[in-house]
Image (cartoon, rainbow, N blue to C red; front, side, top):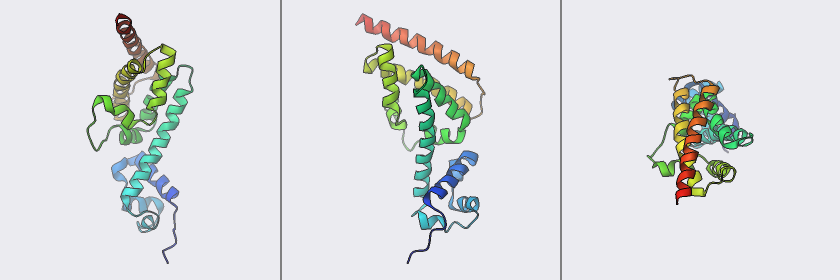
Length: 192
């Protein structure tokens, strides 16, 4: 008969997510997780086969936190701007989760491939650009891609503690870059 679980998968995942938030993802070890739960590491392995399974669940939990931010952004009056600001807020509020999701990778991706691979929300975000601004899917993706690179830069500065930008500064810069890119993309589309 297998040993009785002292902690559920959800409790272990929540504890591992808390460690990640405070100390970073590399700190999630069996020993550290046992300490967080006030026990040895043994109960972890009655719920999970190995630490890779635990870490996978932490990534899913971090993504769920991030998705809540993006959903909030998509519900704002100007959804695309809302998404950009929520991406920045996620980096500011949850720097270790941001680093886990957006500053680490097992493989290098091309710029064209990166957005749909790292963000499950990319189709909804792309849609928030197409209709309101009258863009084709290709032009909307081009604008999205350029704005993501710019927004990601601000978010990385914040998540790493290099800079503490105000929300007003971020909005001002994002609006300026967005407007310039939109004008350029629409101008090129009209010339075709």
